[in-house]
Amino acid sequence: MSFSEKLLRLRKEKGYSQEALAEKLCTTRQAVSKWENGQGFPETEKLLMIGNLFEVSIDYLLKETEEKSGREERGYYVSQEMAEGYLSYQQKLSNRIATGVCLLILACLPYLMFRQEPVVYSFLIILLAAAGIVVLVSAILRDEERYHVLQKEALILDQSYVKQLAERLNRLKRKYAAVIIVGAGMVATGGMAFFLEKKGIAEGALIPYYPVCVVLIAIGAYVIIRASTLWSSYDLLIYNEKHVNRRNAGFWKKIRKKLAD
Image (cartoon, rainbow, N blue to C red; front, side, top):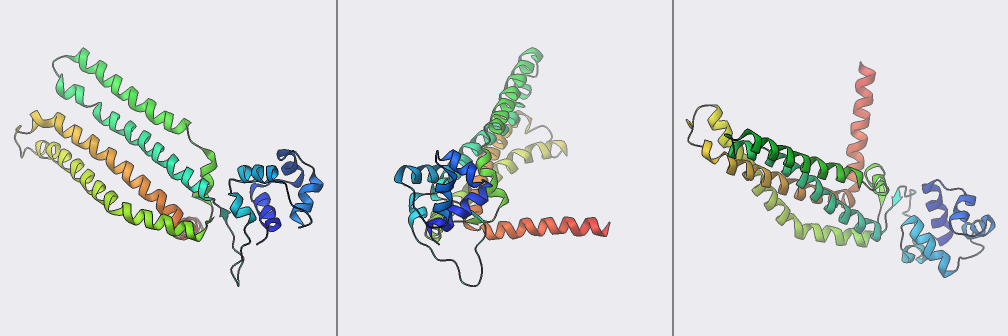
């Protein structure tokens, strides 16, 4: 695929007219038309602007690539820079969400520790719960719309980069799996104490350890959310076709259900 074909595809994927693209690049519609028809080539400054606008590398724009025989490759092109930005964003987002959930769970602690002092535990509960809500809201407000397309469209990535991501995930899988197992064990251990007391099996022996159990549940939830979110982020990029098929299957399942009703 030549530069002209790539520019045309990128422009159409973004929904820009030649006039709109020319305005963003501080040039004329005639210049954009010549570039897309292979009758001219932008200067280095314009190439950098095109790369930044469409979030693709200069190497991708300049390197000649071949279409796969027998079919046209369709989808949203994801540059290495955008993919790395997405992974970094997901890491920060998962940390905020996990922290918010952890704080909300820990809001139960003051009641368990200061039952005889309603004013103290009420104040601390409100403080922790408010902190958790603020962190969760901040995660929502800092949502970056440019990454929404990765969840909705079939993605096109450089296969050598996909291979690098797969190798990176293989190195991290054991760590993520261990973290998730440990986190699930902490949640189960903490929850078991409440379950046994509720059923009257422990006969009050575990009540003094309720604060410890809440901390275990909070930490377990934190590490599970972090590890599972990061793992799924890599999966989305590496096994995108699987995600697209699953999403499409879910869509048609809903359609069939509506038709049946």
